Image 1 (cartoon, one colour):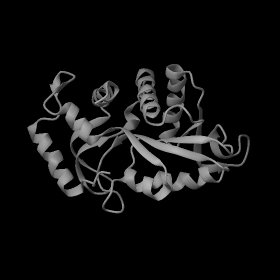
Image 2 (cartoon, one colour):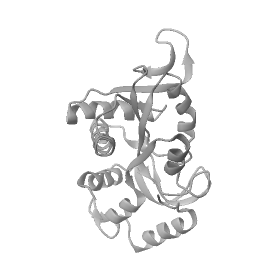
Image 3 (cartoon, one colour):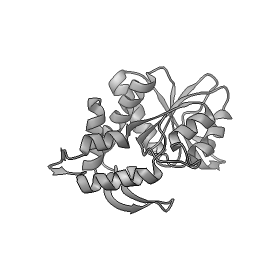
Image 4 (tube, helix red, strand yellow):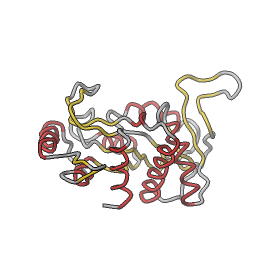
Length: 227
């Protein structure tokens, strides 16, 4: 596993973004882990978060793209901090763009926030975590309506590796197959378990035998077939 992935997993735990226990998800599933990117609130956290996203995007898609698109609302700060980090790390000027939930009819009018999209632009979509693909369903036609725009791929923080709406594949694979662009995550839950199982993080064991058994049971019921 790449060093930045190990550091990112530890960063999520130490920032209290990735929690373990028993949580009821919107879907009604009882999950032994929960992730909330909204907990990143300080300057240092957001700076590091942008660096992790930038490294993952660079290692996966390279630097040959023009725009980072962050679906509203959580994708907005993600696209901003990652664009900054991409310039700092790789010297590449990447524009950021997001959608508004409601069209603005005065001043900086329209559906888009930040940079506009132009024919010929290559776009990487950036999100926190994808469980149902709803935000992509909303934003894909907005991006496509801007002209001859190519979506290079999607990057999220964590691949939960559980079945999506279709009941067979994970949400990232469903999006890839439906829309025709690559989908990736900084880390997968397999990598999280590999990094944390019976290993110290912040001076404590985060995933012990009991929690590992709960995660295994969860995936026996909800785990998706991996591509």
